[in-house]
Image (cartoon, rainbow, N blue to C red; front, top):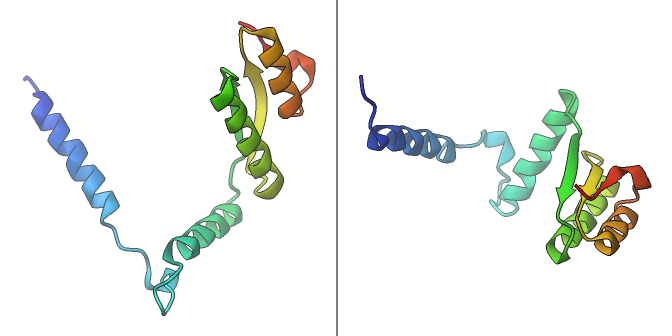
Length: 114
């Protein structure tokens, strides 16, 4: 039995559409309707923490301009949300690697060239 790509694509689109169109519970919508996304996010975070949310461990590969921006954002999130941790960084260029290790507040063994 052969399965065509169109059949698979149709299934993916249907699954994505059904998840995207799912309505939130009425308790998550504020009376005025403003701040909907913020309210939903806060409720999701509260439920996840109550259920024992896992902490994300992240490695950053490539620490050029975009990589350093990502590290700065992750460090800021680590301070506020405490749900992410940078475990190592990797770059082939030694000066960038050293800067990334310093930005991420890591020990030297957690910076890799390869």
